[in-house]
Length: 362
Image (cartoon, rainbow, N blue to C red):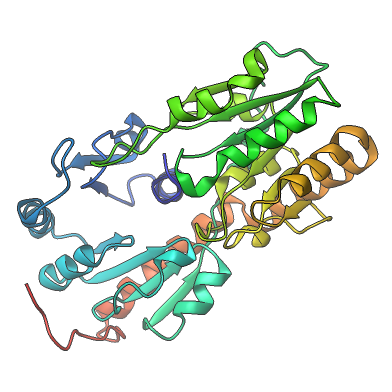
């Protein structure tokens, strides 16, 4: 599950938990045809696209018809101009765009949108003023649930030092950097192991990079496990000694869950400087940040965590505190609850700030 769908799921699950019966969620997919069962547990999830093919005009007409029939109070979408155009035609009471990484900024104007929910401060600053309202809502995680997970170290013993990452397998995530770092580390620290969890998004035109990365990691032999896509990876995350993010600057990460979830478990993280990763990891305080593509820097920081138990414990403690203060799902869920109700109240009382489109084209 990618960051956008995971954010939507965790927020809606929290709203569903805190106010049972108060929300009727409908999740619409148009690109990825694999819908996880968890969405059906908190609402209704439908796929309106074409299996193994890119969406076309017929798909967009189908989405518009679905929304007209549903007549929702709020429509929230992410990252595609065509979704905005559909909302302009259907005209639901409240339209919200949720933006993640900086690469999603500036693709189209935001006329017809009531508010933008930004996943990080970097995007918030970039879009503030473009939409009538802009809100900052970070990823939220269930800290108590994550810390109740029983670790699964995939057969690696207590003496092993597991370097891990959970991520979609796209080129922008630069997993080769992580593999190179682990290969270099094992020359001095043979107890180091690699665990990489993730798959390729099931969309038309996507390339399965798992075989490519498994071949790249072949020099590590049985000291590397590339599991592929795992719907609930938390037991494996709990088995990490260190978690990583190796994305490029060009990929511009949001505030990624691949860092937040391990940190909630007290697992220090080492990340590249990509997008908003510094909003999660403060270099030298709750983890380490290294320059994009700097394999030597990545090796050096991982080595520090292998040899310095006192440093490891200090970063672990601060990582937990950061998540408790900044990425708690209860707090983030309350923010979204307040945003939804505020925008609906403005529409009801005729005080919505939405700016209409100047020109509406097919």
